[in-house]
Amino acid sequence: MANATETVLYQREGDYIPRVAAVHDLCGYGKCSLGVAIPVLSAAGCDVCPVPTGLFSSHTAFPGWYMHDTTDILPDYLNAWKGIGVEIDAVYSGFLGAPEQVDIIRGIYETYPDALRVVDPVMADHGKVYPTYTPELCQAMADLAADADILTPNLTEAAIILGEPIGDEWGGVNIDDAEAERIVRALLDKGAKNVVLKGIQRGDGMIRNFVAGRDCAFFEAKNEYLPYMLHGTGDLYASALLAAVMAGRPLAEAVTFAGDLTHDAMIVSAKQPDFKNRGVSFELLLGKVTDLL
Image 1 (cartoon, rainbow, N blue to C red):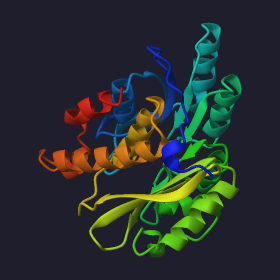
Image 2: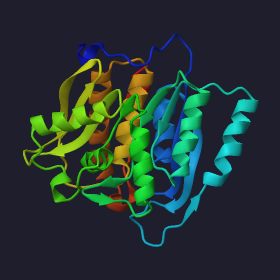
Image 3: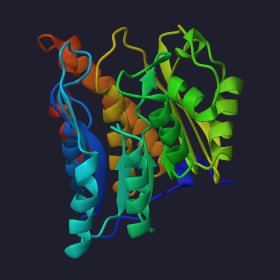
Image 4: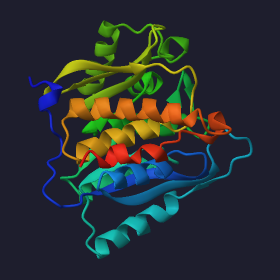
């Protein structure tokens, strides 16, 4: 079995600009989802083709947010792509607005069978499911996870995918290496080809991500733990990881890069007004993404 420094999931060729279908929601205020994916992947030299799963006035930590579900428009939206010969090199999905959107994503997979499939199963964190997610949508997301070439859950999302109980013990504290590997292996057994289990905390000042694949040995990447939560860090992590992968970097390097960029963005964020509500500030660090090329 190869180690992650040898696992390259996308071969970048010369000046070719790969196209990524980014299947995420669009949020008017509070940086997350497409507001993160588009600039980060663009900085890595990707042509980002958004597929909006929902329109939000702001992220859901703000009171009085508005959501428009786009499920009904997506079939015509994607059929129009077929009519003009759009080619896609990767399909990167995150927050979904309805269970039917999983079938739509599977339709994208069928249209572009050679595209890399990246699933960030954005549905829960710290033992709590997000307010727009029904049990049916959680199950649909769990089913989609089995199709992923790269799957990036946190512990709560991993529990949902595996059908295991969620609660305080899934908050990310004191999960040892053996338990982390058990979870990663169980996700691989369900069908994902490579798994990045995010955000493990042990109260030792570090935050860990655990990775393994069908052809990649289990390993750990870690960063300094910062004692505050920000909206959008998961989107930034997954987008930065995919940015490095699409730049042709090995999986281990991509995981390390994503952790480092997210850590540094949190430090930049803390210098901004109202930063805990505003979301993760990454704009000043986009040069680091460009440097991947």
